[in-house]
Length: 254
Image 1 (cartoon, rainbow, N blue to C red):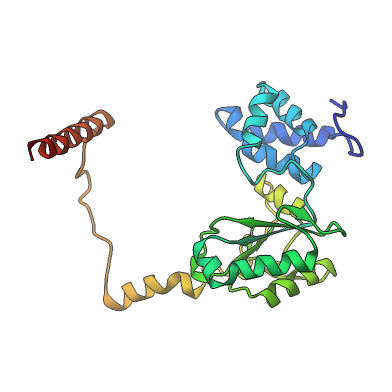
Image 2: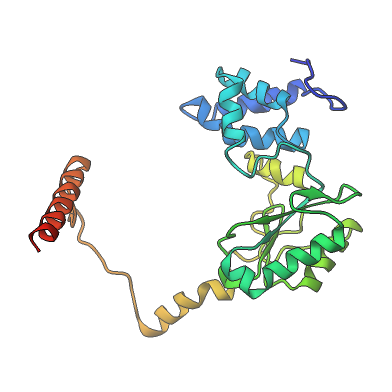
């Protein structure tokens, strides 16, 4: 278990192997624990290393190729080292229109890095990301998966400079920012007891709810046991196929 495939890294410890097994044991099917196991590997190794892949494969009794296939499918798993803080700038449609592209370009220039590159001091890894599901706070930046809302080029630069200087920086709707490795450990399922820091939702996210309450709107109710749709998956498929056939028939008749 101590064989190394890469240089300048500390062998994974027995404690890490024990935690990998503990994650796998949470699930009826052990391989369902692969995603948090890979996060644990990143919290220790700083990325998904060949050693981490092999360790997950050993614990789950699957091939390294199967683990690697998962690790390369999801963008949250990194194959090269990440800095202390992973800064992601949303450049999807709304954030881009609201200034996301300007923020990303400004940070690239300020940090002297390109996309998915790390600053020379090893502190900041910058990447552009697709939708953060926070359009009501566009443009949005994330640091180690914590929200930094309503950003501007200047505020984004200040945030990364404060992080590089070792100052405390708080996310907009969450706790004080921790390092990327610490955040990865949380994603592996080992809580840091900071889940209740910061608001669960901000005012912009609750506008619709407040309008509904002001107008007395409620969601439609359904009587217990009532079924508006098909009673089984088979029936649903049959109905879908019939509907399609009927629509095609009408087109041909015309």
